[in-house]
Length: 112
Image (cartoon, rainbow, N blue to C red):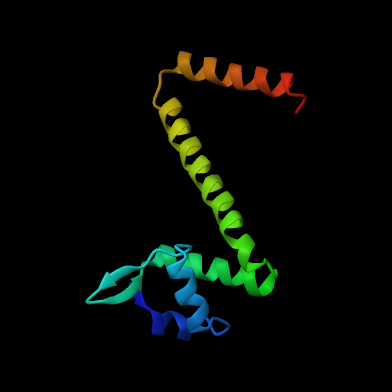
């Protein structure tokens, strides 16, 4: 876990006001440690993502929640797909073959 000073020192373009605003607006989830906010490695990665979106790609501040929500949905969908894949792989060969056949039929029907 990293405190705000560590994060600011590791991300040169980041200023404290932006970081505190993002925490206040719940774009980043901070845990309290003796009254001071600290971020997990995942939330630190999110800070870097937000900095890239905001500073490098010029995504407007008002648009950040929408973009982050879409990214979060994509990650959640990817995780569900991974769990589904693991469940299919755990099945016997007959079930796996049937699932693969259905996927192939769906792909052909969709024109892809």
